[in-house]
Image (tube, rainbow, N blue to C red; front, side, top):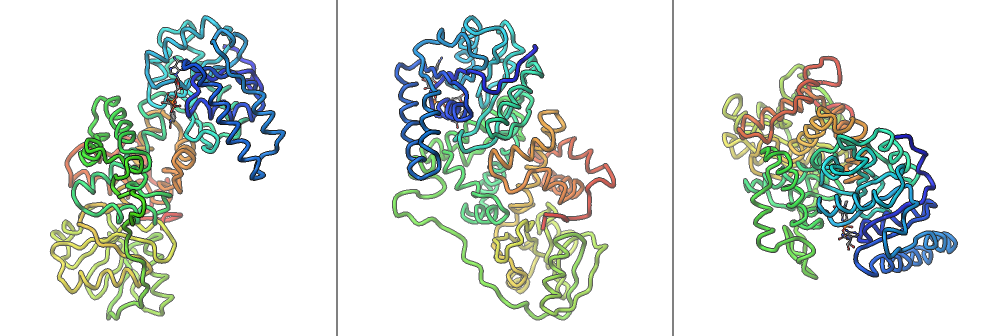
Length: 516
Ligand SMILES: NC(=O)c1ccc[n+]([C@@H]2O[C@H](COP(=O)([O-])OP(=O)(O)OC[C@H]3O[C@@H](n4cnc5c(N)ncnc54)[C@H](O)[C@@H]3O)[C@@H](O)[C@H]2O)c1
């Protein structure tokens, strides 16, 4: 298909709901003449009226000029029938998420618009290949997956189905760029990029809750401390457990019930009980007016306890951070860079960075006096960090270990001895899913990083974490989890395994770079 650039072309948005209205706004602000159609009579005009209200409010705050507001609104034309849109060069459909509705709408549109009109679907979960099935020109259909709220979220996944013409995907990609968005190419596979790679962010916390390893407030605090804007529990409460559960279920079903994507009984119970989160007043947290949200205790700094013999084991950023802290406090220590673990040895007792094994597994096989701590991704002093003792550890060490962690600058939070604790297992699983997506050609590394940072506000992209942490330790951590749980969830992606085997790439024995 030969295509003229779509910049400035007249377009039609079908569906004037939350997404359609946002898409119409963004396109009109970028200078396009936008027709807006909704099956429900009056809905398009109502959406325009609502937009006028919110643009006026922005103008009143000085964020838009009155001229911009007037221009944007002038360019949006609610239309009573699709027949009025014969001359548009792009259609973006944002109607209800039903395959048959989208298919028949697009077939109908093919009878109205010209042969060079691009058809884009804002579907968030339906296969673009399936929607294209039955079109006269399936090559002209592409996914243009915006995120909610459209005017604020910068990411657009440009989703190609099996028959999408590359020129069409490219034209839409460059159009989205001209609207101030960051477009990322994706192949049409379940969940595309963001909804696929993000699954473990919820799933690992739900798995830890199912095992009663920690309370929601602790899990949220630890992941917020790792740089995530919201913890998974508060985020699921915000999204709504029904919505979040439905996305997980659709990715699970679309992957032929691959157990890696299995939904959680914990979340199912919340949904069944109507505990949907903020919208129902109760989810993991109580959202009733005046309810106090539980949180972890505040950080209390303390001096390094006394010790006779201190050794810093391993290499990389965590070992460096421990060494620097000891040195800054004027404490002598012996470096053991070639150790097969990372952490601090204090008079024979061990404070180990998790390697994906439960502390008790280390306790059973190597040393009884051991406590493991989570991957510290934040450099901030006093950031929440989980830890767990081995069952074999004596009471004195279990009492002393969190004091050491506090003295080292961490807001130590005790949890059950779950392998990989909170942050390490969650980030490793996000990396694994991203590596799998790239391995399967869903997107490239840069696309995955941009998508996760812009689509769900992750502090870093999964490949940025991977390059800092190293594929070998991430794969080893997941192998340890896999050995512990013996299921499919922690299966290492062939994409990650291959990287772990590639010597001299990004691997180090432990964390380095940005992973601290
Ligand atoms: N809401 C989100 O966060 C989000 C994010 C990304 C993508 N999406 C996708 O965007 C699409 C729309 O979602 P939404 O949240 O805006 O839904 P919505 O319910 O707010 O709006 C859908 C609109 O489409 C109209 N409609 C239904 N069938 C129609 C038809 N045949 N012709 C014309 N109009 C029709 C409805 O009257 C309604 O106004 C869905 O495919 C959804 O999966 C939603």
